Image (tube, rainbow, N blue to C red; front, side, top):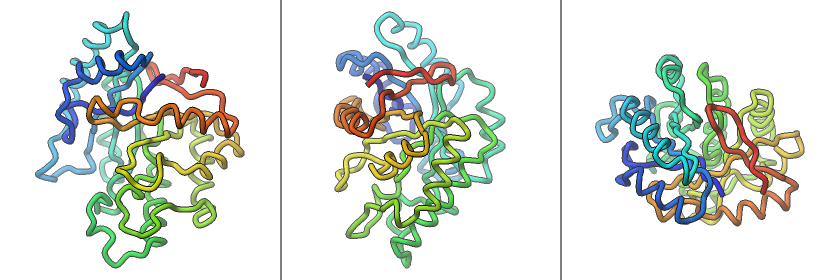
Length: 264
């Protein structure tokens, strides 16, 4: 049992102390949890966003990693919000820290946050999703090291369309470009179970996970995207069963940016 995408009060959208997240993971019997707090240079200038204090984040979690080493493995990480204009800033700052893992995620699409409903004004579902996938493709060429791509399908959490789920066949070329690039770069595909009570249990969708397997993809991570202790490990058993039904044998955890296989 592992969870590679969680947040504590180092993130602007969580109030939970890291120790509470770790204790909950231990109580659930997890062998590994990564705290991957938001490092959102893509949101510079947004008054509602306090930026991650990297020094504090790294120092506090490294201390806790040592303290809890005989009870659980703690991964020290960050989730970077990608944007083209801040790529070099990430490259400069991330290299200064010995993180276990870095998640690269897209939240902002051409300067607009798809969390905000106004993003979808005058946009059809096809146009909104195609634009999102084009930005995902750009993000995969970021000049800094990252270990996984976070919540591919994030836009479906918030899209106001009656049928928010996408289909592989609707954007086949874009999806194949993404999956081929992940495989070529050795970047993991994250399964994320934070779906905001939408009519699906995780992203990406099963058809993408099937296609990834067909193309030879193996690196899969699990992330609850928990911001509170109660959601740690959410739907992990469901995801594990689904992956095994598709022929996957492992999910992966990361230590010093190296993938370590954990048998399903």
